[in-house]
Amino acid sequence: MKMPLVELDGDEMTRILWQWIKDYLIKPFVNLKTEYYDLGLKNRDETDDNVTVEAAEAIKKYGVGVKCATITPNADRVTEYSLKRMYKSPNGTLRAALDGTVFRSPVLCEGIKPLVPNWKKPIIIARHAYGDIYSCKEYSAKKGDNAELTINGDNSIPVFDFEKGPGVVMGMFNTEKSIASFARSCMNYALDKKTDLWFGAKDTISKIYDHTFKDIFNEIFIKEYSEKFKKANIEYFYSLIDDIVARVMRSSGGMIWACKNYDGDVMSDMVATAFGSLAMMTSVLVSPDGKFEYEAAHGTVTRHYYKHLKGEETSTNPVATIFAWTGALRKRGELDKIKALSDFADKLEKATVSTIESGYMTKDLIPLYSGKAQVSGLNSLQFIEKIAQSL
Ligand code: NAP
Ligand code: MG
Image 1 (tube, rainbow, N blue to C red):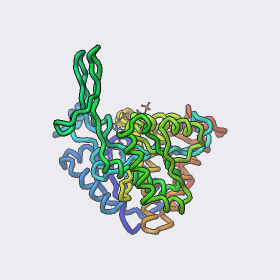
Image 2 (cartoon, rainbow, N blue to C red; image 1 turned 90 degrees about the vertical axis):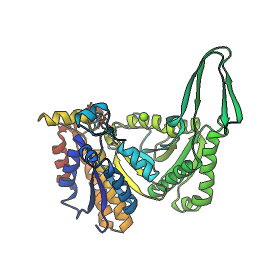
Image 3 (cartoon, helix red, strand yellow; image 1 turned 135 degrees about the horizontal axis):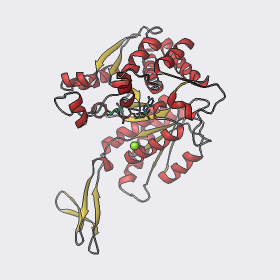
Image 4 (cartoon, helix red, strand yellow; image 1 turned 45 degrees about the vertical axis):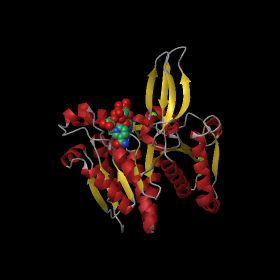
């Protein structure tokens, strides 16, 4: 490697998997160079969470990061770790710093069949993680309340007169800047993955709000991307969200589905469940200027960690974390023109998938498996060693 990967270590069971993945699957094969940031909760507390900010800066500098799952502290964690304060979600901090869009895609294996039988290729959900109902203001209206939307204190738009009885009102927003970043991140990622991009909103009903999303996507596509898409032989396709949902269900997969914030929240859970398991979902944060941060979509698997601490055997699935590493190594290889590095990432992914396809898997996958191989349920380390053997 020429340039380092920015390595963001994390918490609990995934911190243990992290070390094993490096020791058994990467270091024996790659001359690994990383710039290490310990985002484990103890070190976040010791550094007043500056380590997270520094890690985000390092990703901006080097362009590629790989992150282990981390605890987002709540009141219980403040007690458990004797924290100075209740720190913000590290993912929130990274997302804000990189102004990025989150793309989630499933790892597919023969024998682990999606619940939708015609889905043969991954469906990648791109969620706009800014604004809309996630930063709205709401109000419980009483009978007799008259709701208006007021702009700059004078220009009022009537919303609803609750003269006949009580109800609810909501005010929400988004910004053209954030929508444009979202559009560019999606289009860059489509080019990167050489995959079609679909986007759906409700522009027929929401003639200003949702229509603005449609217009910004369209304008950016025509001005900046249509030629590049043509060259890459991929397409950008907009339709009403209803139509997109129907088309996705009938499709064989293999597209990036750009979703507004709420749609992405809901649809990513549907897609993850339909493809099998959260432990098989990878996630990458892509900034509009082409910085990449790879991670697993699941958390730190606390329940397994407490078992591990008691000396009990755990069978935690490392696949999404392995794919976070391969995503980052492949990207580093592409950027630095080190083909052997990208090739290694491909090999490690193939070895992981074929280990499962030959019947060796962690216990979470057993109920989902309907392939022909004789099934052996392994613990986490046995599974990682099995992959290492086939490398
Ligand atoms: P979680 O860690 O995703 O685990 C929830 C459950 O899903 C587990 O108990 C386990 O089910 C199953 N599971 C998830 N990943 C698995 C894997 N790799 N292998 C096998 N089973 C897996 O979610 P959580 O328990 O709600 O959250 C734990 C901590 O993670 C929290 O402190 C939260 O703040 C943090 N978190 C971090 C991130 C992130 O860094 N991106 C994301 C989400 C949550 P069974 O118990 O049934 O085996
Ligand atoms: Mg959700």
